[in-house]
Image (cartoon, rainbow, N blue to C red):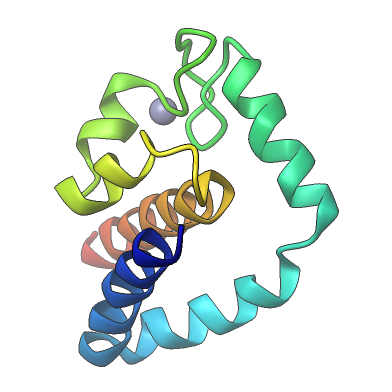
Length: 107
Ligand SMILES: [Zn+2]
């Protein structure tokens, strides 16, 4: 629904304001959202393996517990809404990826 879409948009815009790196990454990955990603999102949901980390997860859950709880609450909640699921999952993957990178930089 429109309102949910707007909310997702708000989260993204807030992040974009805060981080130029996120802005860049978001633009780049947005270009890559296509049918293949939509397919992958639902395959990952059914799969028993967490896509970002490769650990086991329950089929029907987007991510393993460790990845899931590394996300901010807003992103977590968005994963429960069937509306805009693909976009929410995409955002989650992006955030996990950003976290990984900042950990690597910190080393
Ligand atoms: Zn995981």
